[in-house]
Image 1 (cartoon, rainbow, N blue to C red):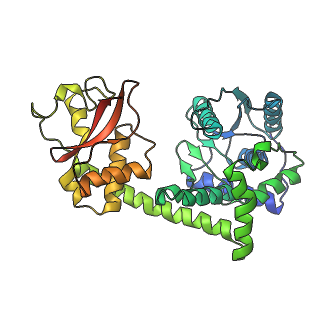
Image 2 (image 1 turned 45 degrees about the vertical axis):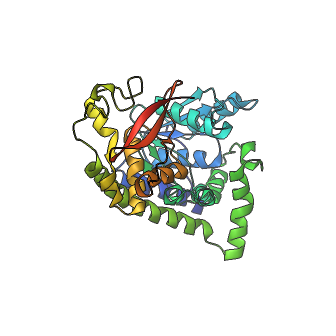
Image 3 (image 1 turned 60 degrees about the horizontal axis):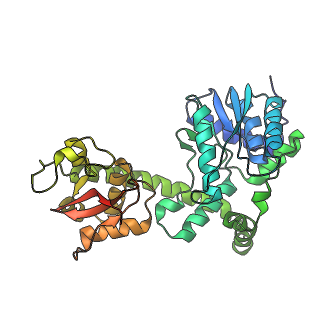
Amino acid sequence: MTGVRLPETEAVLAVRRGVRQWVAARGGRGPVVVGLSGGADSLALVAASVVEAGAVTAVVVDHQLQEGSAAVAARAAEQARALGCVEAVVVPVTVGRAGGVEAAARAARYAALAAVRAGRPVLLGHTLDDQAETVLLGLARGSGGRSIQGMAAWNAPWGRPLLGVRRARTVAMCADLGIEPWHDPHNTDPRYTRVRVREEVLPLLEQVLGGGVAQALGRTADQLREDGAVLDALALELVARARDRTPTSTGDRAASAGPFGPDGPGDSGADDNSRATISIEILATAPPALRRRAVRAWLTDLGITGLMNAHLQAIDELVSNWRGQGPVAVGGGTRAQRLVVTRERGTLAVRAQPRI
């Protein structure tokens, strides 16, 4: 299908410009997947992408959390076809409860999109307003600069072309096209913290500070992300220098046991053992902020994610303020064992311990 002819209204041009700039930054047109909820943001993204990006496949993830969700998903797919998508598919998912409904639905949605993308980038309809909300929520959690870097325009395979576009523009674009978007009741439910930030906090900040708050928060996220990229590169250099690659002695740990003990994950021999230890002497000479970032990178390389600032602070104490304290649990492991970071013989090491 050729899609609708887009009018040259202010809103349409703003959304198209966002997509065009994103496509140009990624090297030009090509087939893409667009995650479509049926809301104004994703519908506007679909319409602009058909014109600016190339062959578009719309994927509607039906979370099956609300009565009538199948009908909502089918209608969104129909709208996508009318807008000129080469394909529009509905993917039903089962949402678990781990981490709360919001987090579980997000995990199910991203997994579904990843499963059907077939090597293509996946475009998501996050706007500047979403970015501002994310930065504010990260700031409130107080978990460091990484949490207020917001969302990246490109974090393979996820693309976000509308991070410079206000939500009001996508709503206006749908009106200009004569498209009726779906209004998710969750997006106005004050039981969700993000909704209260959207409906109460950001408007108040705009009023008190005289406008421009969302744009300022977006610029802050961009600047922090650029700074973070430099620090991440320096942290990886520190990890490379600090890895303990000395031969394992009999009295220390068995090289054949793997980095997490005889039954833990990553059981692949001496090379993994060297990856699971890191020199305290090298770490101790680095600035604290870089040291903590290096520890995070080291643990991420070992498959340990979801680290909180409290984890990193406690591990840093093993390096910089050693008082004989015990190991720091970092999550993961098996039902019988937990993973910990411990100080042993001049190194930090990841080990598996029996759960008590």
